[in-house]
Image 1 (cartoon, helix red, strand yellow):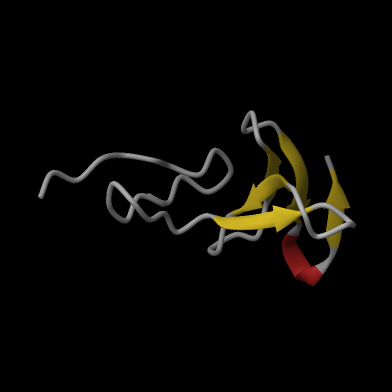
Image 2: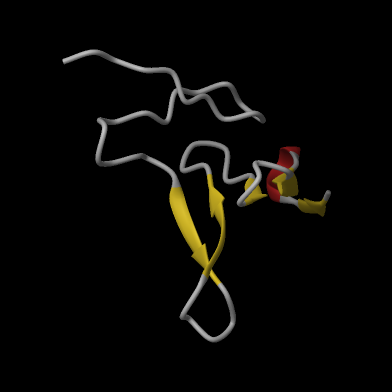
Length: 66
């Protein structure tokens, strides 16, 4: 099976799993009915559906808003 690149824009880890699955974690809206973004399971940075950074974890276990 061909491996594709789907790298996290924040940490550069490859999130591609196969053509049907991804390692990206889906983020639901407050009503739990619509997907509003995704999170990298490695660095925990969050992105909107257009891969724009919305939240990034900083060093020392502190969180910062993008």
